[in-house]
Length: 481
Image (cartoon, rainbow, N blue to C red; front, side, top):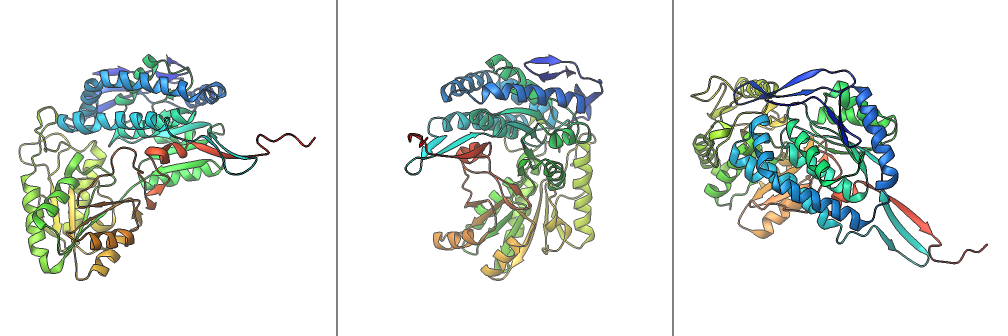
């Protein structure tokens, strides 16, 4: 049991204004694995005040000073990487191989990327005689992060915000907060000046709303559901705050008729199930040619049945663990039943825990065939290892089905003709398009169209989010007076 009932505010661990303990549940066994305190608006006020004061000096630091701090953070994070992986595995159910190879390194990757940007990013430049562009830190950033890729999203926000010269208040998910506490310890050890980074644990009503509506918060950076993102935007609108939102997805995976089916379909199913399907960019809608539909369905079903479901601390590479919390377990079970009720054909998995599990939030890797794009399971983000397969007759129809969604985070295209896959990729309304399994890699923009969000994380795009643009005129010219 790991316990930290205090909050990290102004460089110190301080007691909450009104202690309210909250157990962190290990999703593998449904037992408490940690305990935190849920904060209040009073705690948030203290953290924002500390960040506002620290901004006066941190925003004036040199690029070299910010590089030095990021270098220290990176070094300490690397030293504590194993501890970070174990923490994430315990509190959100990631199998150890995923925690060690994906979850913990993802946060580090964003820190390294932010440090790299400081070598080349132009914070000032001329664009004509006597005219200069200054890109300056926007101010105090309110950060709200999720439970599914906890350190990935913390790193994606904190790294570039530090690089930009901003100060911040972080509210991680109360369902997986222990990694954020460890991260605060890392920043403290690295010597991040008091008030630059602050951590207040809490839930949405108690802390999230207070943060997104606080008059001294200049910008909100939020990752989570589209529903919660709407609430953040509404709260921020009162103060005309800038918002960056990374929200939900229902990403299409178009299998063209010239694709290598065994490879493309299996890859799509395995990608869908990675992290137990709890990824906003998961390829959850497989759009398959009618002429090869039966073959696609058979490969997907066989692949799903081959995926092992194992306890996180004993998982083999490629295995999936439990869903991260009880609410998510109930939601996924309900949507699987909804698919059955609406007439989709269940070809793998289904309702209930996998064989051998009577506790923990474990689910079966599931595949539905004969799905149409109007079914609930084709419209809603399930956030579990559930793949739906939709048939199409023409390439134009495949693109239409792919774009017929309120989301637009990621899209996937599989085919052997570069001309065809590029043509399709250009037509897809999504912030990221992956062709034949290619990934973006470090420094690529992450974000989406439509209800999948506003703004981008990663690379220079991520740093830009935390900057204001100032035009300075008469720069370098002698005053006329």
